[in-house]
Length: 399
Image 1 (cartoon, rainbow, N blue to C red):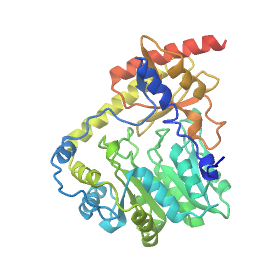
Image 2 (cartoon, one colour; image 1 turned 60 degrees about the horizontal axis):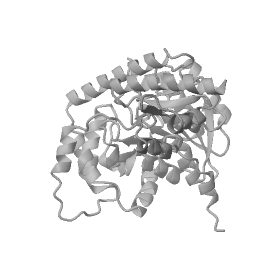
Image 3 (cartoon, rainbow, N blue to C red; image 1 turned 90 degrees about the horizontal axis):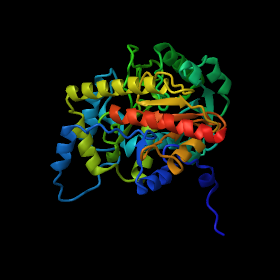
């Protein structure tokens, strides 16, 4: 029998999509599935982006430059300047989504066996891409009981060895919604500088911060400019996940030159996606304000509703549009699958992402799920009813 690679054997299935076949089967059976598992907003994409797509009239669908169109990178310079991030177009590399930016950052900066520190729980693909690069993920634990606040900075120091090469953060955080404080960012800076590490910072949710606490970018940190690799994407802020346009940003010329080798190997980022992304940067502030208020309302509605269900707990996320939720079940993955295969309430069920898939140790987060509040409040209200009924039914079977 032919074998597959050890790398493929070690690659984890995505907790966000691994139950998709069960959801598809439920839909084929006429059951309406409320998707709380994936960060796919139901928000309308900006008109300027849709109009740009309609006007596309290329006679030849040609390659773009491997680093992306100069016009898009130039326009992004103005976008980042609004956040006090001062760049030149050459410091921005367009990628096929934020995921490719993470992957290229790993491939350019880490050798097989090198270690990268993440906060636990973290976005599952960070771990998957590390396996692809042959890197080793080590984690600093955070807890749902205190809203996933960063632990004492000494916990980072405890994880550092001679093989440590990078720290990765997501700010605001996916999956927890946590927002790093200025003090925490400065402490991370000090460790990065002390040990001469890379700081990979995923900041795709900067538009969605629900507190008066300021957004502190890794690019704001003084003294580690060459250590920072910023990960970004247009997917969430303009509700255009399908165009697959992201960015890798760094002032480190050697890193950019290394990343460009991988960019050239995959030839170019999506042509039409770049055109649409460039148009999207002109989205009126009114649209952004309305979307912000909508997510804030959804957050408040969902968190309030969850914490009213017996045995359920969710802290209040400070940013992004996700929350980790503790459920009164023995195994959240079994429960999530059961909701899709064996349960329906008035022709409806819910799909959630099992929490264990967001932890480096699969025994962690066994009673947690990640939920995305990307549905309108009417649908969230129905999903909450279904979830409560599902928990009652599941636990009555287990007793």
